[in-house]
Length: 128
Image 1: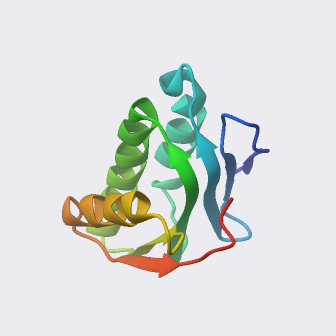
Image 2: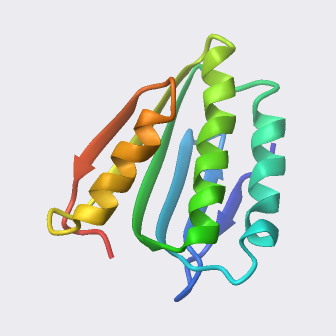
């Protein structure tokens, strides 16, 4: 299974989904004009990954900002990993936020309340 690695731009996040290294990261800013098209390859990758997931999966969200269209994609990604969790796999999500960003902290709470898998919130002022 090939990894997905997308470098961040001013309006698109860095994405690393690498089964071999066990690295699953979405980082930066997500203000995609067409969020559905941008995230489509990620959903296809997750579908393939779900067939043979790693013994442990840790998905990290280190977002500085995301728009409404991206918020739906983020939730959908989390829900796909929740399906993997419900299949009996060890799946955790880490939600990073800056100490001065109440909106991003609250977003983590909202996502966590909609999921039935562990979501760990982590304060991190290095997010940009």
